[in-house]
Amino acid sequence: MQLHVLGSAAGGGVPQWNCACGNCAAARDERLPHRTQASVAASAAGDAWVLFNVTTDIRAQIERDPALAPRPPRETPIACVFLTDANIDHCAGLLDLRQSGDLLVCSTRAVRDTLLRHDMFAPFAKAPRRWAVVDDGPVEAGGLVVRAIGVTALLPAYAGGTTTAGAACAYMMEGPQGTKALYAPIFASLDAPLLAAAAESDVAFFDGSFFSDDELIAQGLGTRTAAEMGHAPIGGADGTLDALRSCPCPRKLYTHLNNSNPILDPASEQARLVREAGIGIAQDGEIVEPAARADRVRTRA
View 1 (cartoon, rainbow, N blue to C red):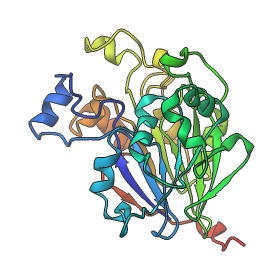
View 2: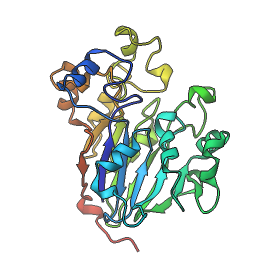
View 3: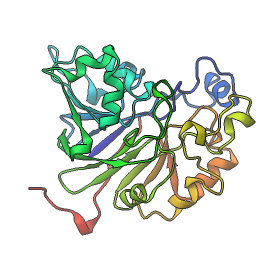
View 4: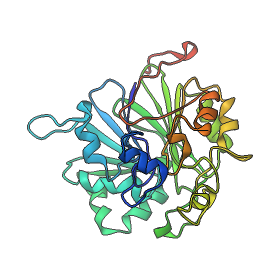
């Protein structure tokens, strides 16, 4: 299995077009790397690829990744898209894929129903395209078996912003040799099922939007807390850092980093704490090739 980190930032990227915070200013001055919005591409053998979320940066992300390049005359190695939620940041890139022929889109029923209320997404549920509901069980795509892991989450603000079953999910993907990877870029709390999925994974990506709950307020960038926006912060008494410190997954990474997050600066105290906990910080363009643990290497029938 191979995973390509197409983007690692939260909505707006880094730098964000209308933000002059310290991290955005540093990115504009090339003191910190630019980051596009969070998405991952995964493949079992490198021939067919599955995208986990499609942001408004998807065209640029495809262009910079040779594995996703089109094949003559007009064929794409992208076989399927899995959506973790209905936030515009994570699904608006579907509109850039509208020329696709038989694209398969997968999501929870709640996410599908939220998006299909809007005419612009309706063509993705009509033949020859298909829209599969992951609540109904695992989906095979790109040589991977992908199953949804329920998480606590909010519907997007445009859909009411309420805590709703299926508002978001994480995805566990399994390769033909038993390799397992978890992609969980958005959740309001690190619940037991998500921790259990991480514990059996060879690599796991977690929501790293904010380091502290009051981050936006403290920096004068907003009025809502991380919790009010549906994100579990990294630090603090109820943060994810302590819980993930003891998680046996051999490689753990934070992704979906908001431009306000101090861990974007590797010299920050917060970045040091993350490193000392044995957790990485995902980078745009990073290629991850997890190896299955020896006790479960097998060939799937």
